[in-house]
Length: 501
Ligand code: ZN
Image (cartoon, rainbow, N blue to C red; front, top):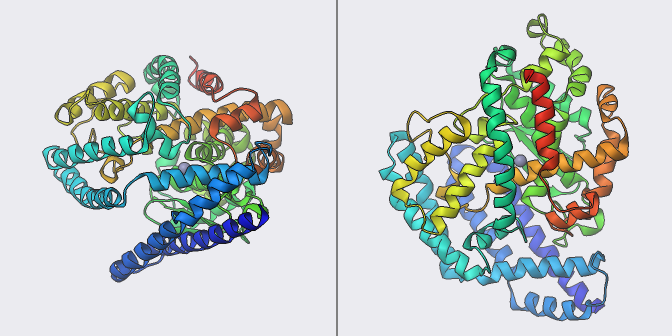
């Protein structure tokens, strides 16, 4: 077994080197590259990605995985080797199930789609995008057939982003959450004037925003010896190894929350990746396990920590030192309320904590109906407006702010959106457990102590890297699969208090 395992690890090391090299080129493209570099960079990225894919899907890898999975059958589920084989086998089966002609067809369609989407949105014209969307849905239906599913066609698409998660479980959770959130949003909207967030909409100098975002990252334990922050149009976090995990950020001149909470969000992703153990490096088992678990980490630091009263007790003096002109009429409590303001909007990326998941649910329902041919592309814009109005109490002024608002569909990302909410639910479930085991987290945050929470996350989440699925890790840490109870209770308690409901 050892000889085969060593061979597999050697091959995976090469695959990992190639894909990390592609990640560096991609990071550079967004953070540094002059526009003139675009064409050459596209071919460089294409070549590296193709080589990594070819190496990974090689028959020899399949043979090794098949034999090793038989030879490791008696090992415990949580054993490193058993986990490596199990996870790689799952990746391998996914990667080899789609015919390469289909992959090329999909890549071409999504390349064309993004352009047609951008033009249609700029022209506020649904018809400019609808043919492409129809084609994309047809491709996604074929993809689901290639990948296979038992119950719902959407299961196959969801599984790409959240292994083993089922549409039924998501539907049930979303139904429960929606029943609680819609009345909460309505009640808050009636008392919107009880929270004044004008302070976050004032002019904030760029350089000082950048410094303060770095200070927040340092405070939560992001290590600039093993990371850095650079400017990009659409922020993300990227990993080159567990010693080099970079965040990116965007500064808006008249909106404080963007750079500040963006840093905490990407910082949460980064802490997770930095906590991946050395022994999994270059094996394929390193890093975060799924999009939802990743999002649970980013949303925890952004919201459960960063938008807590205790955090602002600690951080307000630092804010005041950096922006004395904005702090004069503020204090920690006012700042906590301002950054927690609920304001129903048209798009998820601008959404507050309470309305956030409603945007995700709406898109999840639309995606399900579209792939099952229960909603036609032509009827989508009207359906969208109607759903927005019943969930959030707002009606988009035009299709550009409605069904055309988001790039995901044009790229072929169907099944991706639910992970934003699943991660948010999980962040609250984890946080409840952390509170139970770590004592008064608020007292610690108010003193600027985040090391105990970080150590707890290392022990319970980071150290397992990609070993477990979302439901598996939830059960290991909290004794039950993913649940929405903690999330609903958290929102109701926090926002009933803030809005005096
Ligand atoms: Zn994120």
